[in-house]
Length: 238
Image (cartoon, rainbow, N blue to C red; front, side, top):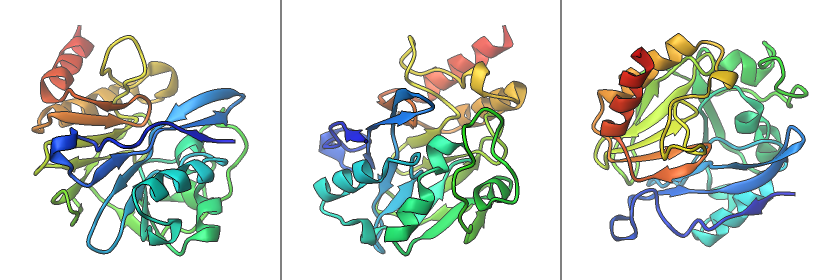
């Protein structure tokens, strides 16, 4: 059973509603309670959902959508940041209800579609789904927040991507950064990052962007950006 936290705030402050909304949901995953943060991005065509969450997240996503004036069927695209079950495991259940397009990076696509197995220790193989769009670094989607740019940030997982909104100085980081530890914003967790050196290179890539606001899948919205990300990159060299 999933429960939702307050999604009334946008991904920046209330005075500057960018059309990007965090959807915090508490679910049971891997034998423990986990709070995750899918993100809804408004476009002229309808909303884009960034990450569907694990199996069991559907009700929480639906509740958030309704609070924002949408139905599940309004989602036309689900963009998966990477292969892990807490991000992609709920896709099949979502697509049973919604005729949406699925997009993920070309390096993540085989895991989502079932051609390759997800990472060891990621629980049972989640139901695979077809990938309709294979993304590459630099691809842009038009949104109400301005262009949403795909930024390749591998390391935590093959084909991991983050989403950058240059007009809003906003980053949806996926798991390239986290905000659920002692620091308000931190680098990827070594325990869950098989290619840590590559992941730190990805943090350096993000440090070159102009970011004021960050959304992490684990930890949600953080009012921090480039300065803190550069600090994380510097600390990783020590």
